[in-house]
Length: 286
Length: 274
Image (cartoon, rainbow over all chains, first blue to last red):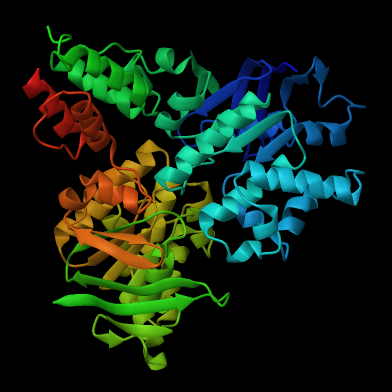
């Protein structure tokens, strides 16, 4: 399912005095089963990028290819594209509207052609994937749930369509620390089942934990690309792009400056902990 | 003097389940208090009582000397206690910054000749002078939250509640908004209540309240509360990274002495040991 952007540019309100170029010649290739993290300062083009991937915006220049097919070419099956690529917007809980959780999660399947039994099976599985029991949760009003619960219901609504590619826009904003961990576990679980995932986030710690590859955008261009270890290696370069490095990496840098050398590759909590254990535990102390 | 004094507040949204169950909260004048707790623990429900967005069902609450039980106090409470919310885009009523900030003043029948001065002062207080004629929806996230805060400051409330105001912001926006909260705190004129999921933000507070299951389960200084990993775990929260690192290293046999609260303290402790 390789998903590619070929020299994609996008201008809002093109041809008017209000024209704003949001992306400038971005090329990108995403492989099946990959978790791709996207970072960047407000206004760098992150949201534009994912809307182009989901086929909600059409590039001003360039092409978006899914399995080698231009998703914006005349004759491309848009309905099939929507089923294959799921997009979870920022604050998806704001989109809940049905009177029960089960109905809300089923809504996206309305025109799927599935039988009621098949739909129920999909909804049951989707709710279970986000950690809810259909029996206990299905009949409740989605609007009476807590913020974190609502978000999981909204995600279930996208999962019910069983997309191959899932795009999350700032999915962990407003979640408590345990909620963040649960969400990252969900990402890993979905990815293990074969779903490719795009994660847009400001949270460098979360991305270091679960992204195979990171993309840093700046002014509509790809400014940095690589694994979290590569992207966070140069702390100053990341700061110039107005993104944070992960907290463990920032700590490693502070320690290194103080004479306790920590390799740049220690970008996760576990990574830093094992470096420090080796250095400080009995026997490892120089 | 206590500006916020709430005792045994219980609240239910109607499903029978109690969202608040005998929660008590107190804030002294000029204090910054932080409310921590997992999603659904009742933090937002509790603070929405402070300015009568939610009616008091059970318990006692006095805010800025006003009894929240009296329906007649509702509008004065709204005036005394301003709120800034999580999503900046949901807080604008006008497409011009200065008009948006003037909106609250106009509604409170501020003399017309006073309005421009107060709008300018409020924008200056959040470092947004010069943005008077701009469109709020075209600002960055941090700027939007500063404009939302200016709208609250213009009304000169005694109390300001920040309900996860940095959750949606990029790192720079977060620093901008936190800088302003810190400045307000240093000014000592406002009583500030902050809900947050970021431990680094709670560290700024004078006092931290922990909530779980609709109840306030613990309170104390940031250091006492946030370095107590067991207490945080009981309340469904994760200890700050420096605290976890300290506990894990100690468990592995590294004899560190003082539990660090911040990244800087962790680095200090490790360097001392090295």
